[in-house]
Image (cartoon, rainbow, N blue to C red; front, side, top):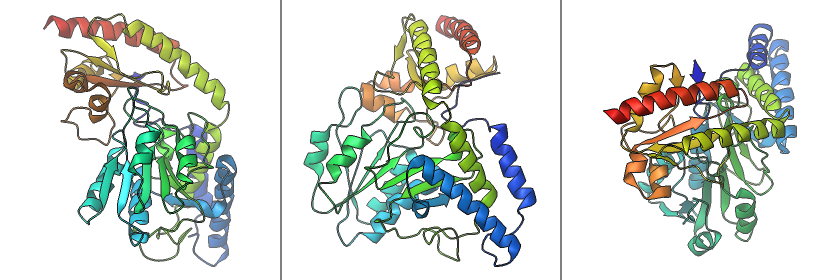
Length: 374
């Protein structure tokens, strides 16, 4: 098997899985219980939270645990909207966001909130002058993803966050799902940040929402005691331990891993650029972990399934999107419907070997020639 869909999900690291198993087997108490077993589980959560806080340079009580990035994004966006709607109902975002962001914003539009879309340059990078022109006295939230999940475009969140400090009544949320654990991330200038374990070799079902202490949210899930007042439910301490371990491991030799993936990306891009009908959609403003291409004349899913016959796995676009539509991100970047209908996302990891890439290229060539001949 050649797995090149790491941006959809990553295989679980064995050390992470072991941490999860130990927490499940040896710490059986409910962390909310007052007896010794409950206290032991609660201490385990506190230790894991401290580690996450240290890595990300935030405070323990600024970490909220959820089930997924989609839940974290919904809590961030809706939580701000409901809590601060007396200030205004204007929200700004981009046209390169995850479907969870658009889903939450569409829901809010039905409730009377107004959404504006910031302009981007030819590389898909947010235009700060456009953002400035959209800011209003009733703007309560700017929500931007750090790295686009289909093309890999990286946004200048530090500069955006610094600019938004001029608007103290506006909150800045950043979707960090595709950047945490892959590149260095500075959270100093953001108010809310979301990421998930299964993108960093952790277990599915656990995510974090970083909420700076000055920010308030209206919870989406109401009920009993948990790790914070913002998300009720029995604390899933084995999963919390596992995301802490996954994050710690992800940051080991981070720069070395990045440079390795960068070299793979350059090699792959140089080979694919030789094909007449292959267009490289990812540009110099993208992280190397994602390489998006379009193969004109061949539909995305047709080529994806052709590769699958050789046990090669890529994706057409982000895993959470509607599969029978074109890639909105590629269309927004290229303004070319044909490229948006024929785009493939190849996502790389430090686990990807050069040998796998060479095998992939051989299989790609065979599929390309076969499908083009038809």
